[in-house]
Structure formats: structure tokens, C-alpha cells
Length: 145
Image 1 (cartoon, rainbow, N blue to C red):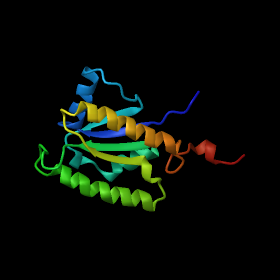
Image 2: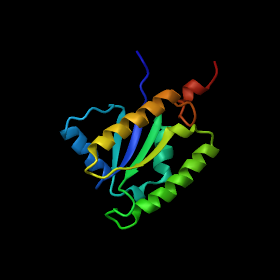
Image 3: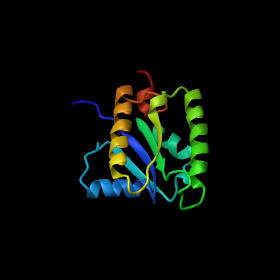
Image 4: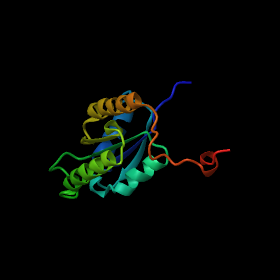
């Protein structure tokens, strides 16, 4: 059986989640590797969410929200962009490969862009292979016999 990546996606409720819904209703094809966590705004993303997903076995992370200037919460996506840069630098400092974390702007009407971005993110994470860093190892597997 061939390995498939597990990707945790944090989507803005108003834009990217709507695009994912529209892509599904429109029967657009995109990889089934993505597990969505719906946030009220991409500005709500926390480094703890990303670190917890990676620690619990995610091979890749995708954060997506409204286009700059179109946030339902005025400037939440600007906060998200700032947080994303900090988190990206932190993960690079910790030794995580650059292609494991992705960020995008997708509005609710851009279902084709959603499907294309989902494919691009999945292909990038698949090319890196399974995550080996930051993955929690069960206690019994870490004790040499």
C-alpha cells in the first residue's frame, strides 16, 4: 500500500471553507488527504494548533483565509499573515522542512482555485514523504529492548 500524506487544514469560516463547500457541491476533484478545521477567522490561528497537529502525526499543514482587505473581521487576515510568518520561521528554526506548511488566500467563490491549491499542497507534502520530526513516539516504542 502506497503512503498518502495527512494534511490538517485550518480554514476561515467565511471564505476558504465556503470555497471548499462550493468545490464539493460542484463535484470538483481534489485529494481526500485534507482534514479541515473550521475557524471563525484565519486570524484565530495559533501556533499551538499547528504544533499540536504536527505532534499528533500530520504530515502537512495548510492555513487559508479571506483575501487581504476582505476579512469579515476587518483585519483578521493581516494578523494571520503576521502569525504565519512567525510560525514559519519558528518551524524552520526547529528543523521542519519548508514544504510542510502552506498558506493561501481563497474567497468563497473561488472553488476552482481551492481544488487547484489542495492538489498543489498535497503534491508538495507527498514529495517530502512522511513527517519524521516532531511526531510523538509512543512510550513503549522509545525504550530499547
